[in-house]
Length: 92
Image 1 (tube, rainbow, N blue to C red):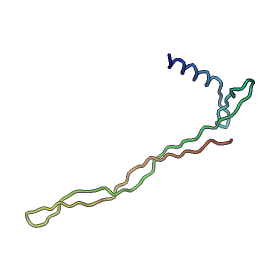
Image 2 (cartoon, rainbow, N blue to C red; image 1 turned 90 degrees about the vertical axis):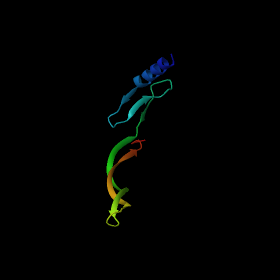
Image 3 (spheres, one colour; image 1 turned 45 degrees about the vertical axis):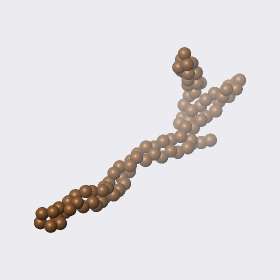
Image 4 (cartoon, rainbow, N blue to C red; image 1 turned 30 degrees about the vertical axis):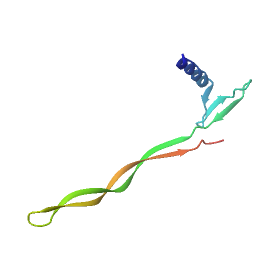
């Protein structure tokens, strides 16, 4: 029952909205009459860029003719990092 009420409220809200040419959403104000207001949603751009990090490496190195000693080191590795750029709504 609760989900039905939420779905009906959402449908009524979306029915009162329409998109403008500049990307905003025109909504009717909850005031008696035919007043409308334009809401500009934020613009979100998602992408990736390459970054370099140091990763640990484990290996062995000859110490004597018989013994190999463990060696811990680092090496540079390139990884892709996600970026998110959010621009606030356009025109007030």
